Amino acid sequence: MHLSNLASVAAPLLGFAAAAPPVPRSYGVPNDGFPNPNAQQLLAIETQADGTLSNAPPPPTLASSSLTAFQLIAFNENFEVAFFSSLVNNITTGVGNFNLPTPENQNELISILKTVLAQEELHAISALQLLTHFGAFAPPPCTYNFPTTDVVSAIRLAETFTAVVMGTLQDASQLLAKNGDDGPVRTVASIIGQEGEQNGFYRTLLGFKPSEKPFLTTSIAAYAFSVLQTFVAECPFPISDIAIPVFTPLSVLSGNGGTDVAPQDQTLTFSANLAGVEAAAKFVGGDGSGLFVTYLSGQLLPISEPVTNVRWDGSSVTFDALFPFTENIMYALTIASLTTSDTVVDPDDLPGVTLAAPGLIQVNDRV
Image 1 (tube, one colour):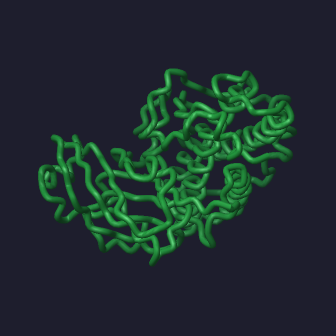
Image 2 (cartoon, one colour):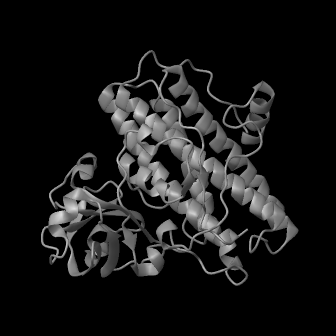
């Protein structure tokens, strides 16, 4: 199966959430007992997932910040469950342009995605159970809007957010190591590998080389939490219950909304609405001096480039920055942020200098 062959029957590819038109329908969770299945329902999910939850006991203690990391993991996994539930439903019912050319292709993809859905449910349940064990806030599912109109755009979106997830789980593992919380690391590492298996499949369907790069791009919790907000329609709890900052979005205007940037040195155009961003007030109306686009790519230290060609419309700003592809071989996912410093050497220090983030950039190495 090769979904790139469906381009002629699918709607044009959409950019990531910020570039897409609003979608009126909201999606929640599957009707199988998730996120609190009974024993019979859990067995059905595990059977569909081709494996079970771990039966290892939880660690004796976890630091407060480690619990916050698992709140983000649970929040993200709830989102993924809703996404794949809606995608399976759209393909099964033939909504809009979600039909595949042949029943054989459709049945094959539905079978695979149902297993992915069940696996994501178990990822979420595992994180939620850990939080509940320690008496921490365990975020219930929200409802979400997904800016996809066909199978190709849905798989493109799945490939991008899965790449972000793998980078964010690196961040969680690093935090657990710093806190001395080694107990859950094996489970987190197993999920990184499982998500990597998924993403190789999505990339193959899209006609990309299945393995992105030798060292996958890292991310940080605040950037992942921020981009997830662009899909949320409504949550049954205040977002502030999860103690992670949310940044105003940074939109990538070049390369089909960042989804298909050419593999070459070039100038990219970005935009952000900085209204209400206190740290941005002194820059509003200025020429961009002191502002930078900072990139995360692979396991390289943060790469910063000064902004140029700054255009203001009130508190909204559009600007350019160099994308230094050749020197850094920036294939696959790069994560951009608008920052007030070009000297950050540790991704963990980025939230303190970030005004808007993340901008998601994909350089696709096609087969």
